[in-house]
Amino acid sequence: MAKVNITQYDATAANNTDIDSVNIGEGCPPSGINNAIRELMAHLADLNAGNVALGTIKVDNLQLDANAITSTDTNGDIAITPNGTGDVVLDGLKFPQADGTANHFLKTDGSAQLSFAQVDTASIAADAIDGTKIADDAIDSEHYTDGSIDTAHISDNAITLAKMASGTDGNIISFDASGNPVAVATGSAGQILTSAGAGAPPTFATPAGGGGTEFIASSGAISNAASVTFTQFDASKYDHYAFYFQHVTPVNDNVILFGYHSTDGGSSFDTTSGDYSGNTNDYTGFQVSAQAGNVGSEANEFGVTGIAHLIAPHLAAFTTMVTVGIATQDTEGDIIPAIRSNGGTIARLAAEDTDAIKFAFSAGNIESGEITMFGIVNS
Image (cartoon, rainbow, N blue to C red; front, top):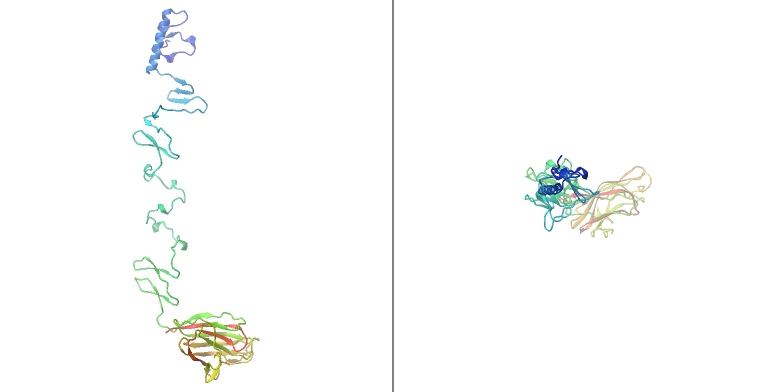
């Protein structure tokens, strides 16, 4: 078959006996050589003009075969480098002439020019990022729109005390007429929470009237103490005071329980005989109990029990103590009533303000028992 173009040439030289039907076999006429060279030049011109396509072209380590350009050396790169300021253009797209910054991506300007760019919001389509593309615990409060979190997105019982804003000690959370939360200001000691009716939050207020009894202080369990002192007098809150004696037992027998008044907050106490009086008798203090034997620390001796009232000690007038049901119980179970000769009432014979009181036996310590102080609220 006549070899009409270069793609039909044979790699075995002996098989090439013609060029486009011009005989170049052994013994061909001399004119065949001239004509063959002319035909070869024509074939090369067709190849150069693109009229004939070669099957495979190899240049060094680069091979062009059909629609593929491959490197023939092991793991070889293929480098495309234009001259000067020329561009690498693939399928009409011009590639950047320099590398971009780390983590940048290729971006087109819509006019076939590619460039490296950083991912920004303009490069992300609306609603393109869903929950699967957001890491857990990756969104903080700066990314929330103000007011975007509503009650539907807060689980029941999800807000703990630690998540509430700090407030003032003693304030109470309530609701105003509009149904909005509001803090009720802390009241004063002894005040009570008072309703203002519908449409207004409650407030703390002083209870109307007076005369009620309030606990003030207790000695606690007494254990071999020389005395018990109370300094919690407050004329702004209380008119009178009541002291409850529960089995206040002396170490010694044949002693009397006294109360001694102070005008300097308990730094000193008046124990002078004649400064206290009851039924024209002089005393060294407010006599709480009668003198009785066998009321000390032996078995079945239960000491002094009952109530003593201190009347208006804040007034610059005689201060009076009135005992009520004060009695002592001895080993024989006998109940020995309080002061027989004065009706249970003794006054401090000085127009002074009493602001502290001390209870002690006429001799020896208080072995056991408890004394409790109550205030009678101002009327």
